[in-house]
Image (cartoon, rainbow, N blue to C red; front, side, top):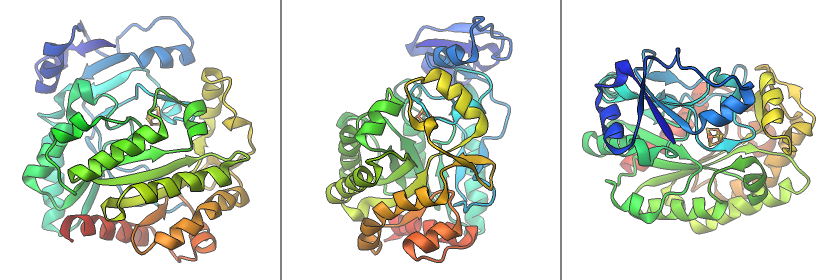
Length: 365
Ligand code: SF4
């Protein structure tokens, strides 16, 4: 990994922590950085081995972008950086981010953390429960050995005990040593995006195997953290409706349900522009050869019958475990809730309430 530091970010403490451990080069700014004259797809690949420590001037706290016309859970993003060293063929970051590289905010501790503290305190004054996550524009743990950001957040949650849960979403599988050294609290949720072994092998380059993710989840839960699982994206293929339920069954038989914060399901969806770049970067990927329609949010997704077929294959386990575990659909229509689970979730507020209740149970039961 090559590390580049913006001049303006040199004096910040996170930058200093990283550059005392690793060799680095100073650059005047990320904007002026001279990339090789390569096509976009090659630059995206090259960028996965280049870490930039920047002086971030945007908003550290964001509402999850959600998606228009589908139900959104009201998640709050603590924006720690952009880009991911892992390489999934369906990753929407390939089309969202118009400049390559792994970007970490050098000023996160001096400016980002205080924004988060202020935001949580204001919500707490209004007795509003908050679900915070860092894994929207990056993987929460893939750069942890270099930056230590998640450990700092966990320490904050442990010591300050906010009226909030922190979800760290990942596709890597930390070892027991990693969890043992952390201050465990059920208010911190280690969340794994899961998929079938076939999809992991074919479409999620550089990520941990399913078994390694589940082993890690078991260690996290034994250590006293909460865990969560996101079947996202569910990808349709001939054996999908047999293999996805096997993954869900494995999770439910391995992980004590009292430690599971929630399990979500979301079928593949992507902005139109993704297909072209992803097909150039992953010519062997089969996922874009299927038929898609443009959804109400202008993203491409499977026809509703295909989505229902995949979700229905999982419904048996959902119904059997719904008293013990909170399940939800991510960015789906009320029609899916009703027709697959016979649950009338029609408004964003109802989905938010469902997940807030699940979060509060972890904290106060
Ligand atoms: S792990 Fe997530 S952020 Fe990283 S490449 Fe895969 S989809 Fe993108």
